[in-house]
Amino acid sequence: MSSNIKQEIAATAARLVVEEGLEFGPAKRRAVRELGLSQRQALPDNDLLEQEVFDYVQLFCADTQPQELLALRQLALTWMRRLEEFRPHLSGAVWRGTATRLSDIYIQLFCDDSKQAELLLLDKGVRFEVSSVSGFRGETVDALSIHSRCPVLNEDIGVHLMVYGYDDLRGALLSDSRGKPMRGDIDGLQRLVDNAA
Image (cartoon, rainbow, N blue to C red):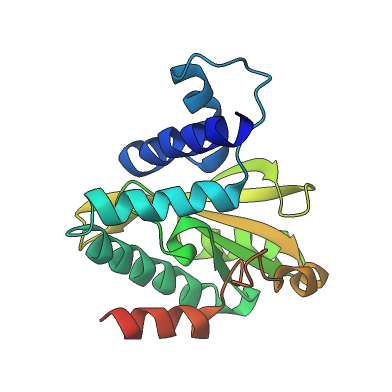
């Protein structure tokens, strides 16, 4: 029973991720509500949900998603080059390949001093909002959020810069349970863009 319910939650959450741009956590919780399940229901893991998102995209968005993903990756590359001194790494749906025009861009920066990235953005006249979010180890990190115009999609896209310490970079280069890298640097992203163009 449990695995069938998890599959159903994952399938419902995948629709919310693709059609409404929700992140995985909120999508799973809303899927539980939509399906009328107990809030204590065990949730599917991110691997299962990501597979459902891939399947949903292939079934319903195959004609538009590859171009939208490429546009988002190109925009991410632009920001990563601007912030190259902070060793940027792309993560999330844009890196993993499940993103659509509703997805935000998540770039992790690894700085000697957490305020350096803020000072650079201020120096370039970039407006941003600062918030605290949970990092990839569960710790609290600063997120600098920007609205950036994507000319190809003719939309403003949320770009979130998560600011880590330089020493955190070692733990950032791990792979997921299927051996896929969780994030990629400028060269890795450039290869994905080149292969799609």
